Image 1 (cartoon, each protein chain N blue to C red):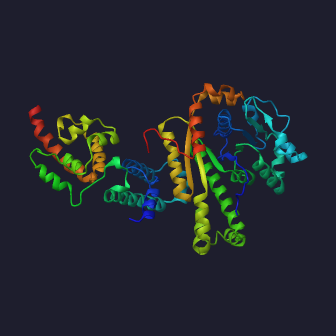
Image 2 (spheres, rainbow over the protein chains, first blue to last red):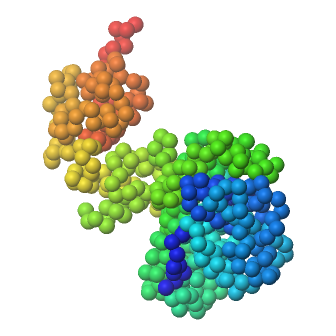
Image 3 (cartoon, each protein chain N blue to C red):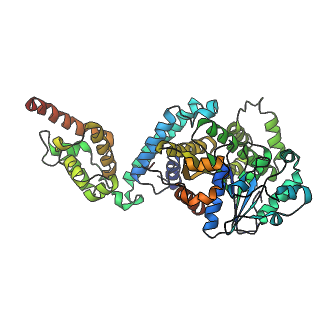
Length: 312
Length: 190
């Protein structure tokens, strides 16, 4: 069966979204913290290779162990866990040489994914780096819950669309390959210009109309491709509604499923502590965001959507 | 209407199959606005989501809205009980309005329609978050106590949806009478 056969009870949540500075690490660490405080066993994995700073969110200095150990000395993930000050919450640092990220071999990547899936905890929360490098996208795609973090501004929205399209393209491609249609996919993709295919949607449409037997697979794949949208740095009710609009556009444009579990207000205290690399989590309960993080995470756990003030 | 068709229309309005009339209406308005104007949500897609695509989305939204309103009217059992969308066949505003008479209604048509639909004021008040007195003033056509026209239109539209009447017809009919009152009123007040 394509892509999911994980003999495990825990869930992997990946937090991505394309643009840097939208607060992915903040969201991932907040979600992880909430889950751990709730009593769940949680491992945070910093996959922002080269730009890793998750550890500093927890007041940890330069980590003595990190994914470097996995890539260079073959250490296994459970050996790389760093305990945080919070019960139930440990993390794996991605603090490795930035040059190394391009050298990650395909087999190493698969091994890493296998080990992430085998971590014996209730929640693995993966913090992804910015951009749409295929390693980032592939990591995003192993998650049970694919979460994108968005700030209410046009560049962040644009990058997020790009990120989601990349992820969907890779998923579609991989799935069709698993079903044995590798040649068709590559054939059409290579000739996309002569077929007048300008974007992912047209590519999918072309496949569906030209190869009717792919229609069912693709429809199933699109419907099952679910993105959880988190809006960060929200300043007013209009910003909150933006989440619903983005949700609508992605559904109508790509035909995928989107849920909007929550948003987090723009909070100066948070950004000050992030910028100064202060351990935000020590202030966790002091910030006005705590309630929104609770709502967001509970909604993620329960598969619910956020209530929008004034209704939609 | 077949079940999967209904589901399709709910999906077009991005709602679950148990959405209330109010939710249908709100979602319709929100989506119509979203796909009728430029925004930072649509702009980044540029030509990938063309004017033609937007038109098609708008068409689907309009269709879904019309179909769902009709569906809620014809099949009250499919709606939540509290929205009370019962509309007797063959009824229309003009019938009720005619009964009300032209010169100041003995039996105001809104109330008539509501009673026929077997919806009580409390339910409407609950659904619309409007006070009972406001609704009574609306029904009894106490024009001097009504809010300004913009609000009035909104109230009428929402009211009409709940009792299963065509909102535009209700607004048209009601405002005609309101206007007549206003015209008659203004020379005296000076």
